[in-house]
Image (cartoon, rainbow, N blue to C red; front, side, top):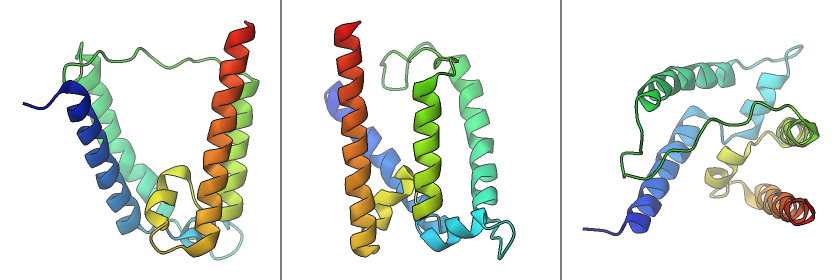
Length: 147
């Protein structure tokens, strides 16, 4: 039997692979398709709306099942509810996400599968995303140390 951390890692890896394949199959790794969704006054492409709508059904089911669970399928404790606080950190992160998504046409979930064929622009976006995540983590650690 595999150790708990190995099993969690394998499960996370497989879930990420399924997500990446879904993003690729739905066309969400194509920046032009995503940018077409934002072009509401031009050649609007509704594909992203269908992808998001289609994702809501399994998530609603998953949240209903999760509400009855006390631990994960692998036996790990489940996290509590996310914060409902709307603060500068949340608004800044949402703005950065939206601006990046609108400029580049890729969200963080789609950039990994897009690395396989997107060339240097996707690699640059991925690198910038990693730097931003590192900066945010560093700021959080600094904030926690001074609090």
